[in-house]
Amino acid sequence: MNSIRLFVLGGSLLLLAGCGAKPPETKTPSVPAAPVAVTPDVVAQLAKADAKDGKEDKVVTKCAGCALGMDGKPEHTALLGDYKVQFCDHCGDKVKDAQKIIMGLKLN
Ligand SMILES: [Zn+2]
Image (cartoon, rainbow, N blue to C red):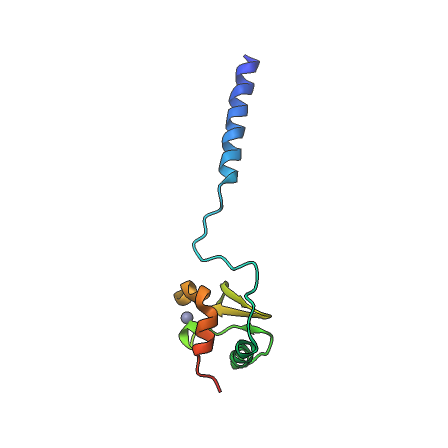
């Protein structure tokens, strides 16, 4: 009797371990782990975009995909050099093109 119960217990533990090994479901694109290397041109453009949100903290909080019209979200962040570039929910899939989008912005 005892051995049967142990067997069942072991089976369910294995099942649980199997579930735990699955990667967690993510609804939003994950933030890249390593920053992209950028040229001085890009850094200059990033500095201008950063200043547009009123705070020069190396975080561009306005969404570059909307020409800085919308607020970006931390879960859609591109890492470009020392800068974090946040995109809004609408532009979350543009994170991978962040450098291109930043360079396409008309900033003074
Ligand atoms: Zn956007």
